[in-house]
Amino acid sequence: MMHMWMWFGYDVGDLLFCGLKIDTRWAFALAWIALFFIAVLFEASKVYLARVQREAHLKLYPLRSDERRNLLCER
Image (cartoon, rainbow, N blue to C red; front, side, top):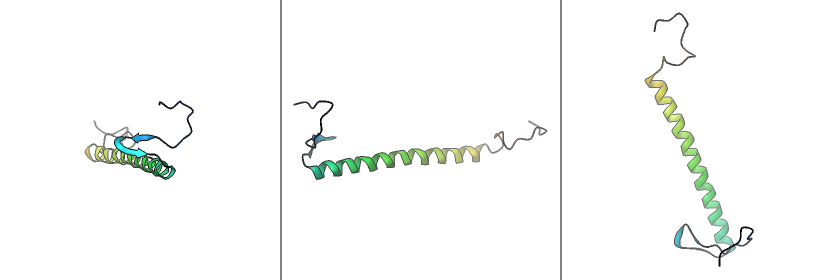
């Protein structure tokens, strides 16, 4: 039976993988907490990657930033 969009229950059945059954309240809570932490780690890895890429860009092109360029410098 397919659940409706306003379904309040914890008997999810298979979640993400075949055989990973969510049929108790504790399994539902643990699956929710695990997915939450996986999402937080994923977002943190994107922020870290952006920081590393910015630092690498600044090391490769240190004088191309408009903040450091003087109006009287030679190009």
